[in-house]
Length: 566
Image 1 (cartoon, rainbow, N blue to C red):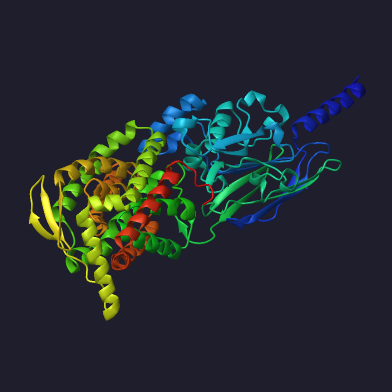
Image 2 (image 1 turned 180 degrees about the vertical axis):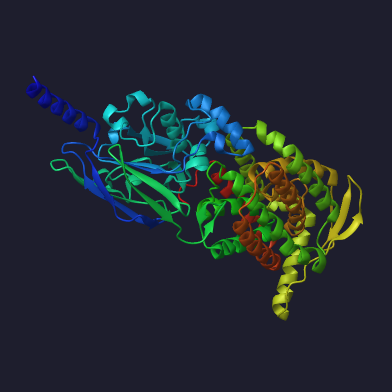
């Protein structure tokens, strides 16, 4: 009896080991410490005939309850009900399944993106690409593969993993790594395979070589370029923990920006944006936000949405760039219409520090941006219309002012001197009727109207983390019929107020800027402001308006996410 029973037990154990992979793997890793962005190689042997499943998981786990972000707590509470995970569901923020059998966990599918969701719907888009979708139901995952997921053990963890890697909010709040098409993040890599075999963009940098006859394998993949310094990972080969390694820093680390970036590049970018901003009085915050998104790739620490670090950091430019240019505009050239600037500033301060937090909490940000895009493009069209002879004829004071400016430029060139700008000469001051002369031409505007307009722009400023000049300048040139040389200094007063109000608002809710990112933006923005104030008088009214219109059209594309080519 014993002779029969012993072989039976051995056969049963072999069958179990073959199915589960227990005590069946041997693996080594190329190094126990690598630098962010370097390649990791894992090689060893699994049971012959098996597929290869290597789970690389960050040791430090994250659950929604771990965040201290006010807005993140509310968003997670709302989203986890739909996505079927709980506040204490923990997953590794950075997790990769390297395998020769990606179909066990999900499948490739079409992804539409870009364009106005208000017209195209949630699943619409003007662009089409392919992405890898994890299986919606944990029960659908191949049973053998399910046992190979390492720290991902439950259905709730699987649901949270899908949410973190496939929703834009999850990527920008938890994962911090995304696969891009152009400059648009599509999803985050989770399941990856041999790039030479698949050709998929998300598999780039990954190689999987498996000899099923012997079980020998070699797998390599690139670590994420912006992995935080001293991030530790565990490696599970076919369900067994086989090794661990540490990712060390590679460059200057922005602790809240969560990126490696030399501050000098940020300073250069801020100088360029600050110069542009001080010349046209608009889009400084929006262009700096674009610079942070496209170049710096500001992400925020795990658990804090990228926008809540990007926005307060952005305030540095919309505050210090105006300060860099304001001395020349206000003291040297005396072309600041103070009653308009202060009334607008008061309105935008109230809107940004008080009303903004209530309105932005009610309005869906995505639709909010898209309707704003419609307004922006209409302003761009109107700005170009103002350059037509017919419109210029109606605004004879601007036409006369432009002629005087052009004559001054011609005289300066002939004499080899610099152009002397006109000065603001007050004629009448009241809350609803302010009149002044500029280049000998009289202009009239209602300060109270711009105080009310400031309230609305303050809300926009708080929501986006921008100054609001991209709305104010075209409003002043279209509604107020003011020349660009007057509108720009007024705009800079307003953006200074909005920046202070918005920054205080972020601090009150517990969101802080990245210190080094902010310092670099302050230095660059201040220098750019001084350059822009000097450069403005080198350009005609027409040129400045064309530049403003081009900027507004750019923002239209940006709001609608149809700038994939950038």
